[in-house]
Structures are given as C-alpha cells and as structure tokens.
Amino acid sequence: MIIAFVTGASKIIETVTEKRAALLPADIRANGFAELGGEPVVTAFDTTRARTVDALLAWLDWQSASGVLLLTDDSLPGLVDLLGDHFSVHRFTPPAYGAKTANQLTATLSKCLRSYKYLANRFADAKYQQIFRLPLRNFDAPEIERMRLLCRDMTQRNYGREIDAMLRDMRERQLPKRASEYDDLYFVDDAGKHFELGPEHHAQADTAMPPHNLLCIIANRFRFGKWFDGTTHYNVSRAKGASVVGTYPDCHGALTAHKKRTHINMFTSDFF
Image: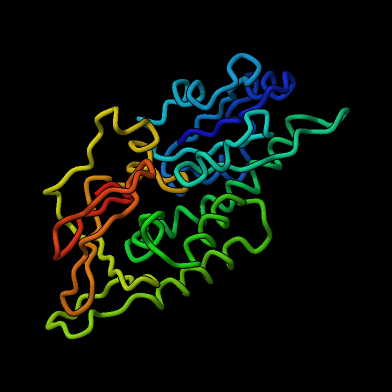
C-alpha cells in the first residue's frame, strides 16, 4: 500500500525520507498490515521539482499497489478533485513553525489510517463493494455525491458512522426488477436504470490511448484508494424489458451512443 505526502515543504520531505515507516502509528505497526491490504510504503512527492499531476502519476508506483493514500497540502492544486474518486486523497495542514514535524505527521496518519481501515473493511465485503464501485457518471442518485464527499475526507469525526449511514441508504435502492421472473436484486437509480455487478469476464474495458487517457485506466482499477478487479462489469438494464438505447457519458466524460436495446456492459470507470 502506498502512502505519499504530496508537498513542497522541505521539512516534511526530509522527515518522511528519514523516518518512512517509523511515522506510522504504533498500533498500526504492532498489529500488522492485513487490515490495510498490504504493507505500507511511506514516501513523499516533491512538488517543487514537478508541479503536474501527470508527473505525480508517472512517479507513483500505483500499478503494483493494493491501495493508494495521498496526503496533500494543496501545493498541487486540484489534486483532490482530479484523483479523489480513484485514490484516497486528503488535505492536511503542514506542521506549524517550531512543531515537531514527525509527531504531527504521525498524528495525521493516525486519523487517516483509522478511517482507511474502516473503509477497507467495508470494501472487502462484496455486498458493499458493489455500492462503492458503481459508475459515478451514470448512476443518477444524490447518494453518489454524498459517497464521493465522504471518501475524500477521512479526518472527519464519526467517519465510520457516516459511511454506514450512506451504505444503508444505498441498499434501500437495491430492489428486484418489476414484472420479472427472476429474483435478482439491482441497484436502481433515479432514472430507472438497474445496475447489477455480474461475474462475467467476457468483455474488457478498452485501454487504447487515445481516445482514452491514463485516468480511464486508473478508474477501472482503483476506487477511493482500494484496488479492485476491473475485469468485471455491471449489467445495466431497465424494468419490463424497456430499451436502454441512448447516449451516456463514458470513462473520459464523452457522450457516447449505445445502440443495443436490452442491456449495457458498463465498467466501474463508466466505460461501456
């Protein structure tokens, strides 16, 4: 699991480079790393050397990670908005002048990792993972925006309680399809689209660049900082056999026509 401070503050970079895993809270180090999904690698990205998200992604070894947690002091503007749906990205306040930098960084990590462990535990449960993995552009429901905001602020109080309340509300959207002989349950959005995460591996998300970009690929491997199996997709349909022919936003936001009437094979990234 990658834990990276994204900052231009030399004192923070020096401290992270010197201390690394020693910055992790004592209880995390004592209890092992199973709850995090992998042994943490603590590092820092120096924004004074490279000031673009592309440079950060080229530096970040996300391809081999089980999870990614980024802590930013906003020296790379827009990072939370751009990557917050894929990685676990959170703002932190740099230690004040005269403060013990290592202690402050450990306190920040303690708050974030406590919440990250809670999220990881829920994400590992299949009945919740299919909620977290819903295509964000195409599942029309206010709970989606609530989920996105919650997962971008792990330092808030009552984090676990808020996550569980959101999951309960989302599960109320899980219903059988009307006038169907099957008892399968679907997540139903406000537009009447029915989403079911299937076990099939017969379709794969396209990765050609262009038209796709690197975020299209990342979006089909990570959600809120947790790796998932991007070879599975949602089957999207409507009740009573109604047509799903129409235009939908894809993984890079382009409106794309879908011509098959019965269903859509849609991935977590919104590729279909």
